Amino acid sequence: MSNNKNNIEKIHQSPSEDYENSSKHYDKILNPFLNHIRKAVTDWIIVNQPKNILDIGCGTGKQISLLPNNINVIGVDSSPAMLKIADKQATGKCIEADAVNLPFQDNKFDLIISQFALHEKNMEAINSELKEVSRLLKPNGKFLIVDFDYPTKRTILSQILGFGIYLIEKNAGDEHFGNYKSWMGSGGLEKIISDSGWKIFERQLFYKGNIHFTIWKN
Ligand SMILES: C[S@@+](CC[C@H](N)C(=O)[O-])C[C@H]1O[C@@H](n2cnc3c(N)ncnc32)[C@H](O)[C@@H]1O
Image 1 (cartoon, rainbow, N blue to C red):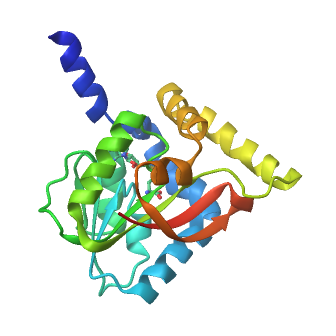
Image 2: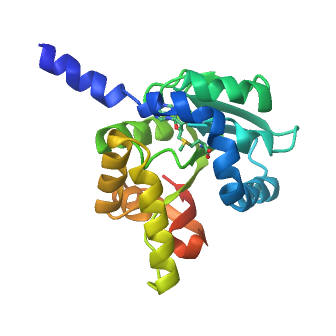
């Protein structure tokens, strides 16, 4: 009995405690490296005009704060520390919830975003989240994922950048790093999501292909 309970807790458990200490420095350290990717996401949204957007694992709410005010967007995150910052920069738009059990009705969203929030979960949690995303998306809805993958062309620079990402992840805590290794070991973003039956129809590459910005349909 107790084993079962532990398993269930493991699926739902997020590595949010990792962010207790790093939340205050998160934007300061990472935004200089991520601003151009966040701008590409903002530009895609402005061009494609989805009506209702959900950002799962919205963190400090930085991406949401960059979207025009007339766009209807809500963020969810399981880390109170990250949400405290989101509260200030994405006023009133981010709530505490677990990605595998979200408090929204079926078919509610035109676009769901996951930016750097899948690679840090175990495969069971990823599969549960993908089911939740399918439930929440409208029939023609799209899933925008930005996360780590392998470069399509291996060059010295792409390998150096990939190693830089590896070192950052290695410093993010044992559980986080273990999940990152299993993410990359399973083939990275595009392999994992396409193996789950999703179809990719748009992609942009960043950091010599170590980071993929992808759009998917179920
Ligand atoms: C690397 S941060 C990315 C934050 C943000 N998307 C960004 O681009 O900066 C990953 C976020 O996912 C959140 N997270 C992890 N597991 C979660 C879960 N099960 N449900 C909701 N949020 C989760 C973490 O608390 C963290 O804020």
